[in-house]
Length: 401
Image 1: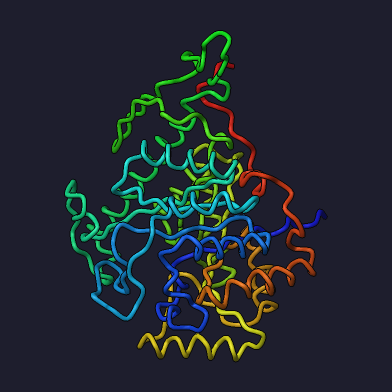
Image 2 (image 1 turned 90 degrees about the horizontal axis):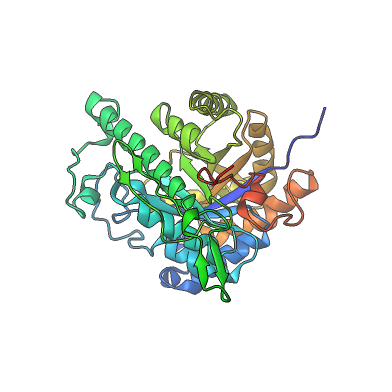
């Protein structure tokens, strides 16, 4: 029997951490949140730990503790920088780690996203990715005035109208990703000639109209940005719920993030995404399924548990998440990750509860523990994000055979 493939690891960066009171922790650096050096330091630390990539959270409205609306709180972090621009700023300061900003498909245009992420791929020399997100928040729709969204509460998640809206949002996201991918392919790899002697800069026959006609978008093309160094940057999507989110991952993504709370849930989530992948005719395409966890790590389990409890007291409520919230040691987390890998997960995206504390516990505690067990790399072995993830460079769909 062959040895299992090494784990893939990513971290999800959001403000000072995923706990709403993390900004009040020692070492949180809340005054640095809107500075480039803050984000550069975080990504540099993640690269020190040889992680595959980082994701940058983003949204089209202020952060909120309410699931569907603004909350008006003033004791939690509010306000953030643009995720794509953060990634572009830190790209020249790193060499190997992948950079995956979040883009909200619901109110943005695929043409703009295609050229922004293609540019990031050039700036990072082939380390760009894209995390696709949807939103059903009424206040965010009001920023744009192009559509209306009913106001649903957390208790309305299973009512028919809400289900129809969510289904439409994820179907729109699938159209969005398809349009973006076609635009990335709209320039062939050798379309740029740059021949000074003949005066030919491009071969116009190798630029293509994409002529995408979907239910939600009509995109002519071509892009204004040549094909990215990776051909297509890596596309990922959160697939925490059954049904349409997992169909989006199976149909359109290179990575789907799931949020199981035990091994059986992990196995079921992987099976559903694989079935969606097969139904979309992509059964042979490489597709990673990552498990998401919020982590509070310390040298002793009780210290990690007590630290979360202290943050809960500051927030005024016990923090929970769509993902499992883990408190314990790096060794205990390594045990959990290796157990979940047997359910079919190929990697994990860890959400540090308090970045100032937990990011280093991941890079300097968890990573060495996994290395001792032969489950994680000891050096970067590829120069692109696709290379790190074992994803081949896609053939251009418009290039002549």
